[in-house]
Length: 307
Image (cartoon, rainbow, N blue to C red; front, side, top):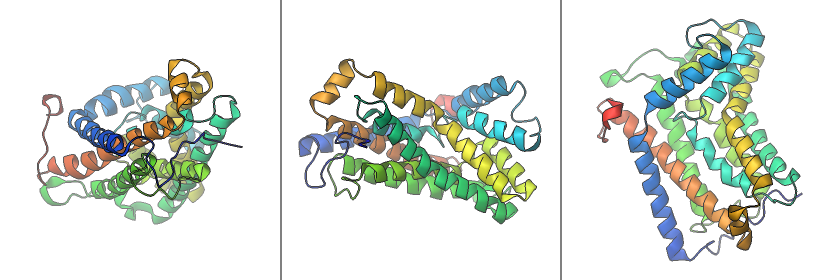
């Protein structure tokens, strides 16, 4: 069952002219940089994320206690959905071209692609929930200590996790544009699994307050299966919007965009490369440059709305 129509190029040639591919790569990195500059954590974390979670749960997601395993499962999925646009999850949109690039003649093709992505995602998030509970309060992500210049120790895990994931996104993006050898070029299912695993890995660095609350609850249960369940549901909530949007675009995308891609199927690879490069650059710049700069480690421009 074909999940993608020529969605990744041969490692020997670019999906567009080589000069054009480098231009796309440069523009993508600049786009990621600009996104990191203008990003408002207050807007996406509080105004959007917090309000969405409060509205769906019908109570304060941040202050109300999590009631039992069923309550935790609901909280996990809703808080994951509410955190769709946070800086620790926004790069999930890098998966969108992978799903929309699926074959449009059969609705099962984009669904299969999405299934491979979700499978890779759950493999990581469920495993992390299980192991995280076993590690318990020693998990750096749950630390309340601060280091130099008042930087929370738990953010060090964010810096490392998102930096690594961002660099892998960049590697995959360059491969999709044909600018470097791509070991996944002829393996669309493996590419979907890897992309899903990276999305599941977002939990490893996530400092999002509602996820922190969920992780505290899971550790307090001393039940690794509770951690596996709730972390998996959080990831499913994270990818809900992208999954539905990508599936609908793939199935119903018979308009101008669909015809434009169908004219040259490798255009899907170019779209994937641009998305992965831009979002990979965003992850690296935001978490490894902007975040440390906020605590006096280096410099990064600060917009008035982020003061």
